Picture: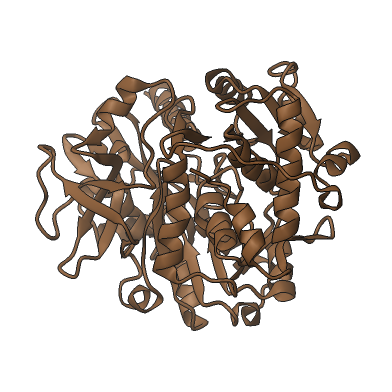
Length: 508
C-alpha cells in the first residue's frame, strides 16, 4: 500500500502555505514539501538507507523534521525523532536501543551527541549542504515503496520519567490513523491554521497537532523553541484558529509582559494536554470568554479523548469523550469494568494505539488486557459518559496505610491565592512509609505561607492528606517534555526531609 500521503496532498491542493518558519523567513507549499521529501528520499537511498532502516533527527522544531518523516514514508524507512532535552545517558540508550543508522542534527545540539554517536552523526539541517539536497527547485521524483499496513513506520521514545526511555512502535496504520481520527472528530480542514510551539519530538506537538493540520491541508507555523513572549508575538502576527499547548506554556504566555487577550479572538479551539490542567490558567481564559479544554493522550496512545468547548465550560476538569474510532474501558484491580463514578485504570483501544514496545516483548505483554492498552492512569466516568483523569497509578501516595491521590490535594491547594503552581508527591518517611508533600510556586512572598496553607488545607481535607512538608521553588523544574519533573522534585523533597531529620537529631 502507498502511504505517501504528502504526494497526494500536493496533487490535490492549490499552491498555498503549508509550513511557515518565521525565524528562517521561509514558507513552503505542499508541492514544495513533496519535492523536498522526494529529494531527501533519493539522497537517503544513495547513502544506503533501505526499507526498515532507522533514520533519526536531533533538532528543534524545523521543516527538516517533516522532510525526514515524509522521506521515510516514501522509502519505507523507520523515522526516529530524538528528544534533545534528555540526559546524556538517556540519549545514549535511545541511540543504542533503536539501532539508528544515521542522525540528522541541529548544530546547537551537536555537543549532546559527541562521544555518544560520533559515527552516526550525519548532517546539519541548517547547513547549505542540506538545503541544496532538499531544494524543491531541483525536484527529483521518487517512486514510493509498496508497504504493508503493519510495517514499522516510526519509533518514538518515552520521556524516561520512571527509568530509561522505552521505544514506542507505530506501524503505518497506527501512525496514519491518529490524524484521521482527529480530523474527523474536530472537522479539521484546509482553513485551519496553528502555531507549533510544543516540541515536535513529542506526540502532542507532532502526532496530535502538526500531522492532522497538514493531512487536512491546513497551515502550520513553526516556533523553533518555545518562549511565552515570542509566542504572544506569533499569535498577533499569524492569528491561528487552532492551538494545542501544555498548561505551563499557557501560563508562560499569560505572565509575559506582552500578553494581549485580543490575540486569541480568532481561536475556535484552545486545547491543553500533556499534564494536569492549571486551574488558574483555566480561570483566566474563562474570564476572557475562552473555554480552554482538556485533551488526553500519551506516547503509546496519541490523542484519544478531547472535551468540547461547550462541555468544557460545564465540566472544566473532564477530558471529555473518546475521539472517533477509539474505545475505552475503566478497569478495577480484577480487570472488570467499574461502575459510574468509581475509580479504576483507564484502558484504550484503537488503530492509533501502539502495538507495543521496541525489543520489549514482556513489557508489551503486560501493557495490554483483552486488546486494550493499560495507560496507568486512574480515571472515572460520570453518568453522561464524560471521563475524568484522577491520577497516575504509580503516583498514588500510601501513607500509614491510607491512599492519597496527589491530584485531589493539588486541586485544593491550588485554590489558595498564594499558589501559582503546585505539585504534590510522596517522600520517604520512617514513620509512615511515605508522607505527603508539595512543591509550590508562590504568587507573592509571604513568610507565613506554611501556616496559611496548612489552615486552608485542614478546613477541606482529612488530616492524612495534608502536606507535612512544603518545598518552595521560584519556578517548577520541567522534564524533557515540559511537564513538572517529579523525579527531580522527589529527590529534592527527600533531601529536605533527611536534612530536617538530621537537624532534629542534633537538637535531641
